[in-house]
Image (tube, rainbow, N blue to C red; front, side):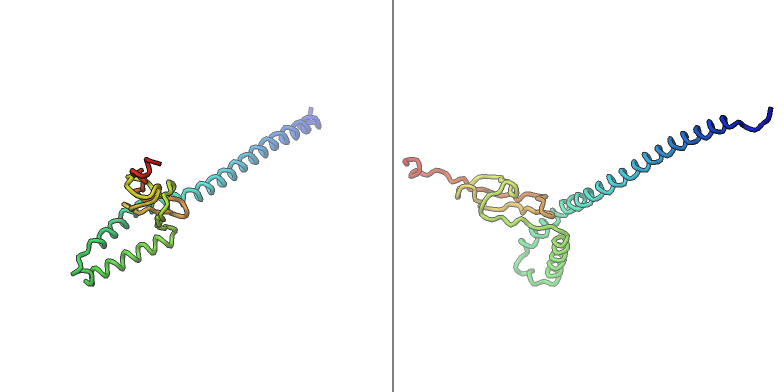
Length: 165
């Protein structure tokens, strides 16, 4: 007997190796597809996370904007021309300009109450569903309301002449 493998044995080894190669190739293809899917999902999540993180940061800045505005509304007349006050006014303007460039915009309440942009805190005498007073400004970030304006709304109370009709 010779030590050389027979043709049948060689053929069997070739088939076994081809079978193993096919299994490994399929495993590699599935792994590559899984990796590509993970990369796509990660990219999509990153694209969704960035605007949300920006919006969350803008929400954190809103009380600072409110405090600047309250401070400037209550400056005594004798200090309005003070250099320090003028400097603070410029800082506040620079701050809000930067936020506006990134997509923050104030919700300017028109006369009609809009539940998507306004939060009615109280109803008062006045024309029905009209914004009467703004208690706290609302803001949008990239067309999404991040804080509704807190307002009072007219309730158009029925007067004596209305009840007789």
